[in-house]
Image (spheres, rainbow, N blue to C red):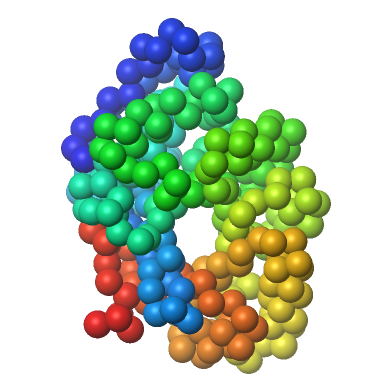
Length: 257
């Protein structure tokens, strides 16, 4: 919370991890991922914001290539510190953090700041999920496969975000073996009346289940979408129907009031 300064002083880290610094203020908003069957919150996704709630886009457009590592580290630390301060570490919910694969040079070295933040705030690392945007997966697939494998070996779960957003390659599911797949909102929009979308989502869900991958549907805005997804056996959902992101807060889903 407040000003995060990512000063890279750890000389035991890889050379890439000692590049640059990020000393501008960051904050986090949190949006719940809902288990509609259990009527509970499965996890909260941390979403970067400016110190006064400015959008993620306004922050990201100012980040230079030399700042990627420090920015990624600052986001992780801010997410964990804020979530811990809000009591998420003592709850039954997990914390999902987006990360920039291009900022990870050597997974075991680059995870140290994250582990230190978790230890300092007593946030259980078993509750951490790392989300990778699908578009990022195709830029350096071998490097990303190494990251996912290393994270799995360390006990972290990973998720492919925005799956089906236009870059989709089914080989990703075999190569990366994520724990979760988050279906892009464009596949979900109007699914209750669109047979083609319903068929695509149904087959994606069946394929993921067969591979032991948990499916999350993103961008749920209507009761019709929620009902159609539930009929397909998808019970983990995220969207404005349940709650908008809460700035520095953990919003309660509307149906739980």
